[in-house]
Length: 83
Image (cartoon, rainbow, N blue to C red; front, side):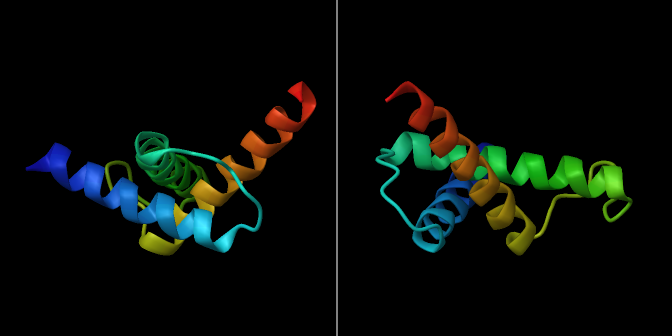
């Protein structure tokens, strides 16, 4: 059940991040899930570095969405350089 829960949370976080950040990111369903999962991992890592989370403690919903938005901004910057 852990992997399925991770995929569902990743999808929800990715969709919220894409809805909040303006612009057309043109990501499919799989990339939206990956975005959400990576955003959660980024938020958890950053929170541990700042002392907000203990090792092994997952990031919260808001932090995960912020992490995903940060990744979307980076994606937009990298994509903008290529095109």
